[in-house]
Length: 469
Ligand code: NAD
Image (cartoon, rainbow, N blue to C red; front, top):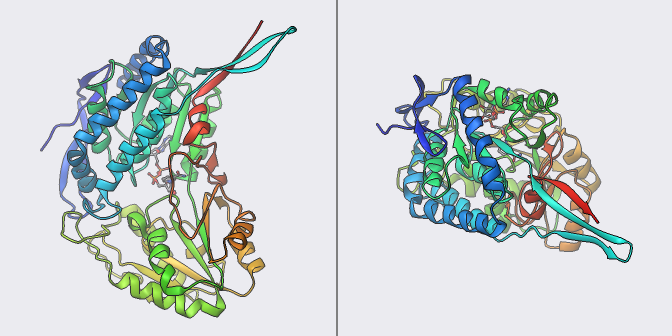
């Protein structure tokens, strides 16, 4: 079994205590991960703090070079990292949207972010004076990540924070700490010591980071319930926050669609990473005139998708990552059927023996059904008919979440007018969840605060300083 270490100030750091990490496909123990104490956490934060003056005073172009070196080292080691992701997260290694895709996305994101510039803005320059708007780094940024896309989401946090001159402490989910630990180790082979550090352990470390006086910003991706706790404990020290929280994205299919043509896009929009994706489609609204055909096309497409161990040839989807999430999915599907839902494929399990949940499609009339109103974060999609577009928009917006949404139509202008009325941060047309590094991404309502990606995401790691002369 490989040994995993924390990285503090460029060096491996061992801890006395450890916790077990399991493969969700086989339930086998993969490794023991270091369990840091609060004292060890303080030491790690101090390293990041001590390194900040030196890292922040480098020329921006020097940091851009370092970010490109990160992309190189991750790319050179992508198979090793993808293997760890598949072992601890479960997503298939070779699938179209599997762990090689995740590490490929992380490399591409890193390279793209390195191209972003942060020029000084001249707001005034005339006989009355000159005003320059500068962007200054915040200090130490703490990244707290979930277990669904452990490497890609950490990259979304780390790269813009480093590029803009901050030093970083990363705390991955206790379910999937290993790929992050290895990634931070690799980053340290090309970065000055202390710039990027890792800490693993239980949820209490996240809470300690949120109210630590030496952390200047928390970038948090996870559930809405935990995000609220982070926000409240960050209040004392007035931390900057980016909160990427839960989603319950709606897709709206307009009556002009060809059901067979859109079935693959609808399926992958909902079932990417087995539905364990913040911006996956989690509710599908279909015009009644083509409802039966869409249900049938989607069911036919879904029947041919192979679910299995991530190292099995041809597996496109893996298990649910952990028992807690598995039970949420099974409970919501069970309740949906008890409250009138009709199973088209898959369905609830009476005596589950492992973490493999069948791909499930449920036809539902009532928008208040639990599988519609709650985030399932797993492989189960409710499909709801509507009669008028007004009704579809009202049902889509009748939810606390507001992360993403999609509209499906052959008429782009009509789709755009529906998109404009959806209460969410990103709306895709004829696709769903296709995040990209140049398009700022974030939630409205209970789905979060602030955005990541692009210039706006980069600037979220800075303070404004104006120099007036
Ligand atoms: P979670 O909230 O349980 O955990 C997320 C992280 O927070 C973990 O690292 C955990 O250890 C840490 N944590 C737990 N308690 C904490 C506390 N009190 N203070 C600080 N940190 C604490 O979420 P999860 O189950 O790992 O992830 C699933 C959720 O994440 C889903 O709701 C999903 O929609 C959401 N998500 C959102 C996005 C997005 O971009 N909006 C992306 C991915 C996942």
